Every structure is written in C-alpha cells, then in structure tokens.
Length: 217
Image: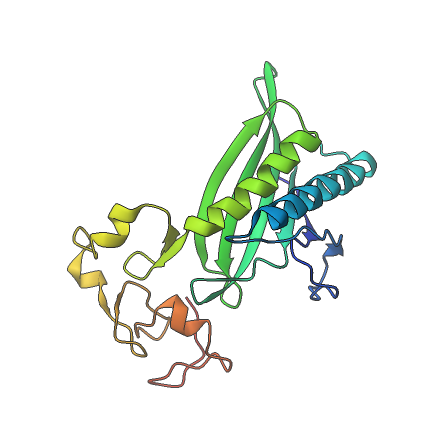
C-alpha cells in the first residue's frame, strides 16, 4: 500500500514545526478543549474553512485505490503528559470491486520513540467531501477530551474500566515499576529496564536513567 504524508494544523500556531519529507499544509483549526459557546462557534467555523482547504488538496491530488494519505495534526502534540504525534489516516479501499469506500483512522504515537499508543478506525464512508472531513476533525478533538494514558497497558484509552482495573488481568511477569516515577508499567526498553512512556518522552538525551544505554522500545 502506497502512503503519503501531509501536515495539517488544528491550532492557532503560526509557524509549523519542521518534519523531513513532509509536504506542509497549514490548516488553522482552533483546538478548543472545554471552550465557551463563542469559542465553539469559532471552532466550528475554523473546521469548516479548513475542511474546504483539505478538499482543495484532494482536488489536486487524487487518492487512488489502495493508497493511504496521512495527515499529521501539528497542534495535537501533547496528551496526558506524553509528547505525541497525531495522525489522521485516510484510506481508499474496495471490497471485491463491489463496494468502494473511504476509511478514516486516528493513530497516535509517542513523538520520539514512535511507539504506537492509540490506533482506531473512526468512520467509513462511500464519499469524500467537506461534510465527512468536518465530522472527522470534530471527532478527533472530542476524542482527545476523553483519552487518557494507561501505564499498565502502555496505551491511550477511553475505557474507564481498563483504567481502573490496574493491570489485574495482565501477566505479572510483564509488569514492573517505572524506574523514574515508580508507577507500575509494562513498557520495557531494549536494555530491559522498565520506564513508562510518560517519563521516557521527557528524557531529552534518550539515555536510560539506570544504565545510560540509548533507549529503544
């Protein structure tokens, strides 16, 4: 499957962050978490405006069968104390030439180590238009309000039961204390030391706090 990556921005950031080999499309949709009614109106107007701009991109760049377009949402780069990279994936598929459809998926990974922390299909549609894009941008912002990082499972989750079970159903051999915050986690490095992604994402030199080896997951 061929994949291309495009950068969009759902915040009021004026200067986009630089990423190598990524075509930049700065889409200034306001990210509003817990906003007022006036801000809700402004946010809706921004989403509509930039859904139109994304459609203009697709007018010039046709998404062919079997291709995937990745939209890196710049402003959604931090969630629950984790530095992240948020990607809206758009696939064009067909089912035995009988039913062709577009699939919208949300993928979140830790920005430094690329560990995938959330991956979910948001919606499938037989059309690609402004209405569908507006729905997806709004849904992503709403999803961010409910996602929380679970150290025991090393993933973002909206499932309160998973967050509360505290690893009750996990293999005890795979659980240990994070060497930084001492909370329980299943996240282990290449040097076999346990460190949760929340702590690892803030280690600028990428060296293990215990043995000083370069951290990889």
